[in-house]
Amino acid sequence: MKLTWTKKKITFIIVIIICTTLLYVKYFIKERTELPKEILNAQNIELYNELGEKVFFSDLVKDRSVLVFRFSELNCEICVEEEIKRLKVLSKSIKNRLLFVTSYSFERYLYTFKRINNFKLPIYNIVPNKIKIPVEELNIPYYFVLDSALNIHDIFVPEKTEPENTEKYFKDIILKHSLNKFSEND
Image 1: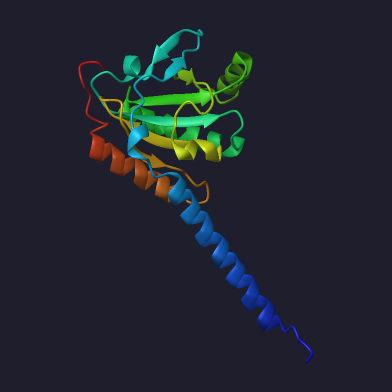
Image 2 (image 1 turned 180 degrees about the horizontal axis):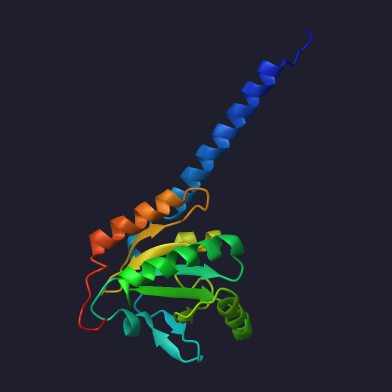
């Protein structure tokens, strides 16, 4: 019995492989970003400001929810830069309710990143994997909302090929968490 490979059979197999891979990736990311209840709080996580001084999320969040953009020097540089462009525009509407948390092994790399991207907002450095949520292991940039009780909500992994999803995420979390309403501390 001779197996003949026609273009139709090969195309069908390739389509099946691609669909299976896409479904697996979507499922994997969704599963890896769901939060177990015991790691919802960021109470004692240490950050370092640009002067190297230790601060905690509680020092930065106070009585309001904030949007946190988490990235590191090891993430896709183009992905991070695209999100930074979006966030520069968004920062005008949500004022001081936006935190940038990164992991840079050397301060000079962080300063270079800020200079190249003409980035004026403060960035806080954190020890890698200090935020104990599964998406942290994926080594990709992501967002989450941190409320006044320091609970982590609404984790989102932006996809550079689907910017409309990121825009929808911004609209949804701004409404849900009243990020565009300013408190006395803003």
